Image 1: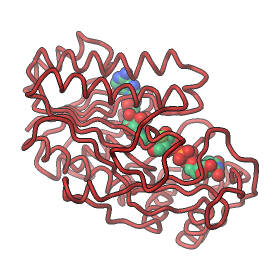
Image 2: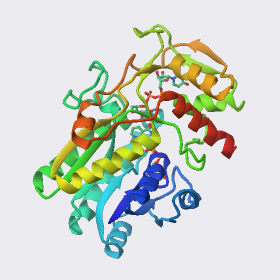
Image 3: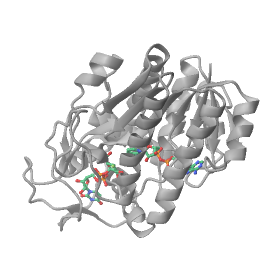
Length: 332
Ligand code: NAD
Ligand code: UFG
């Protein structure tokens, strides 16, 4: 079964492509390489023996998408392609709205034209906004506090409306919590360009000496040790969640909204301590000011994912830290 994976050379997309191959699907990737490299395709081949079919194209390019759909009988789409940096989205809202919203609209339009009715969408825990209390359950009200979050919030609404108008549609809105870790081979992972914004890539840069010190953004939150608590999930578990969602869509129509998290919260210091212990390296850190826009605690209710998808995360924080560092060491 041919599955179009938009953003398939990216961090979560590449791990999902591996799982698709392992589960007997035929992934076809479209990516404009704005935040990834074509060399990822060879790494995927090294892991699972298949060099995926690849189109270097933008999902906003309707003609290019039409070519892909006309050349391949695509049964479902997993839609990862998008820009994802919160801070950058505040500085460049036009780019974010245009890439994320327009890209999804064009994709849906072409899917409709070619009678492709199944889509798995990368949403985010960011849609729970600032006013809910963890554990977050899927029926809680959603909102957004920055342009990136707004694009996820709006894309969820757009996909729901599109599905409402077409009873043949099957849509999975997957709300990811904090993906970290890497493929155990050390071939796939994430090492962003420039100075990282997110915790795990920053820890890795400090551990390997490229950056001097991690600033812990606040230790006066109402959490066990005062630092921010998040639900970190291993990217391979997350990738497997997409296979479960795809199988669900093969049997069900309508819209499924579901969290992909572990249900366990870890503080910034929990992550730093686990990383140091598991990898035997030092992560210099100091306590700094809170980062504007951050909340104290964010973790998922995982009941729905277990019940509806039969999926749950298996890998723990130690394994996430180990695999993330292994990827950095093998690729520096
Ligand atoms: P990533 O940047 O590694 O992957 C996204 C891929 O999409 C990249 O390869 C990029 O080149 C490609 N892309 C971007 N715009 C494109 C376009 N217009 N046309 C074609 N390709 C395009 O990011 P990721 O971490 O793998 O995230 C994948 C998805 O999951 C994104 O939609 C992101 O918003 C969402 N998400 C990520 C996180 C996270 O923390 N990583 C959390 C929640 C949701
Ligand atoms: N943190 C630090 N120092 C750093 C970076 C982060 O202390 O240098 C802290 C943050 O304050 C927070 C925790 O580490 O408490 C995690 O921060 P990240 O930036 O790694 O992740 P966020 O939870 O802020 O946001 C991430 C993605 C969002 C997504 C959200 C929910 O960046 O796009 O998870 O999925 F919406």
